[in-house]
Structure formats: structure tokens, C-alpha cells
Image (cartoon, rainbow, N blue to C red):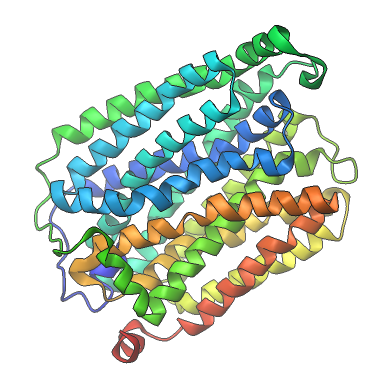
Length: 431
């Protein structure tokens, strides 16, 4: 979406004049990336407390990413109506409300209430992401949009690297040795309320931080100059799917987010397996940042590579690399199985920003529409993880379940090959 306003050649929507705004956008990427990655920490926590199957545990991701499907287009309409900065404030306050709902979830000791709190939190993140992605493309020349969005996504990865480590200490570190399956009635409810208090404390801290950020953004709500949006109905953005490049790109976002989230959600349980590393829960949780840290390093490196190498070719190469690593992990044991899985984070690094920028080239004033549709595609994070969990339950093997993300990466590699040509040449025939 962000590159959509410039990638056609830059003539449709000149760069926005807002000195210092880049730092604000980078902060947004850091915040919503970090909060999203905390799901990887609370999944094993809730799985133990509510004695869930892998499929049921993955419903955490379904509740979270379903918000992208439901809220993205209304969020895009809101942003078009009130502007990027005010839209960001609305999203941040909604995120804060979701964090506060964890208090209610803990008091109720009901898994469904936790899912509702996650949905509200993700709804705010969706609006913030609808704002952040288009802004990055508008804050510089169109020629460097692939590199610029990848660099911004590095701050997203910084959040996904830092938050799970701290979350593992605060949330998993308090996990008691009591087996929830051995408790019933009032004893079980009291145990769940006690153990979920660690989750509440973590999200209360986030609520305070989000309020401060929202207040800061509100102070600069009138700083943005040159903001342009197209008129149109809320669902008008779906007409963009008629462009083969955009349609395949949106599908690739669906597959990428689903694969990335599925792998991240299984890391703790995967590393706890006896034939892999046999780690205790907290120690396995502390290794999640290595997965997201690979994406962090890869995005800084990728922002430079994408200035000199065709983005489509780079995308095809890293997607192929992810398939190879998944195959190695699924068919090996010990350190090789563990580290090949964690290394997929490096392959993931440039995928989202590159798919996004390749798909949205040429959208011009329809950048917000395109951003909304792409954010709808993020619903892949709600569907592919539970399907992966279902495969694990059915086969009794987490390694076997990894073949579903591998299929996702195969189709993404195909999009990279298709979109390797310059946007103007493809758009001239397909748009």
C-alpha cells in the first residue's frame, strides 16, 4: 500500500511533506510487531491452563488475525475520512482497550474471553497498520520504496524480537508445576485466575505505553501535508483484485502471514520435543526471539540488497530457502532440526514488505484502498495456523505439519518470479 502511491512512477501522489514523520512511523511498526509476537508466548501458556489441543491453541491466532479480515476495510474507510494521523490515534486507543480487556478475561478464567480481548487488540493493530504501510511509501522517492518499506519492517522485527523474550520471562516464567488437567471445579478456576495474572500484568503495562504514544501522536495530528485519498465505497478496493499483479500479491500476503505465524506459534512446543532439544517451556520461549531476530537482521540487509537486485528475484530466492529449511527441520533431529526451523525467520525477513510493494505498484490515490485489501489478506494468520495445528493433531507430528507452510512458500516463490519485471511494464498490460 505504501508503495502503491509512488511505485507507478511517482507522478500519481507526490511525497508527503512531514519532516520527522518517519520516526513516528517506525515506532508504529515496532509497537504492532512486538504485540503481535506476544501471541507466540501466550499460546503455550493458555494451552497448558485450558488443556487445549494444538488446533484449539491455534485459535489464539485465529481470533487475533480475524480482525484483519473484519476491520481492515472499515479501518481504511475511517482513515480516508479522518486522515492518517487521527486514524493512528484511533487504532492506538482501540489497542489500549484490548489490553485492558485482559483484566476481564483473567477474572472470568474463560478461554473465550481471552480470544475476545485478542480480537479487540488486533482490531486496533489493523487500523494502525492501514495507516503505517501507505505512509512509508509516501515519505520518499518512489524508486526506493521497496528498500524503504523493508527498512521500516526492520523496526517491526525489532519489536517481534524484544517482546517475546521479555514476555517469556513475565508470562511463561510464572507457569506453575501444577497440571491443570488434574484440577476441577473451583480449584481449576482459581488456578487459572492466578496463572493468567501474569498475562494481565504484561498487557496492563502495554496499555499505559499505548496511551502515551496515542497522546504524542495526537499532538502532531495536523503536521501531515499533501495527504490525498480517492473517493469510493468501502468495498470498492476489491476491484483492485482484477489486476493480476495485485490479486496474486494479496494471495501471497495471505499465505506468507499464515506460514510465518504458524511456524512462530509452534516454536515453543517444537523445541520442547525430546527428539529436538527437549527444553523446558520458559527456555524454549526465550528462543522465539531468534526466529524473529533473523527477520530483523534480514530486513536491514535486505533494504540494501533491494536497491540493486530485482525485488521479485529476491522474493523467489528467500521463499525457496524457507522451503529447504522446513524440509531439513522436518526430517532431522537435535540442533539441526531446531536451528533450521529458527533460521526461517531470516528467509521471512523481506517477504511482507516486498510482496506488499510488488502488489501495490501503480495504485496512486487508491493507496488506502489497496492497503485495506492487503490487510484483509492478513487473515491468513487466522486460518493457516489452526490448519497446521490440525495436521499436527491428526498426524501426531509437528514435523509433518510443517509441510503446510512449505506449500505456502512455494506459491510465494511463484509470485516472485511473476513479479520480477518492472512494474510499469506489467501494469501496462494487466491493470
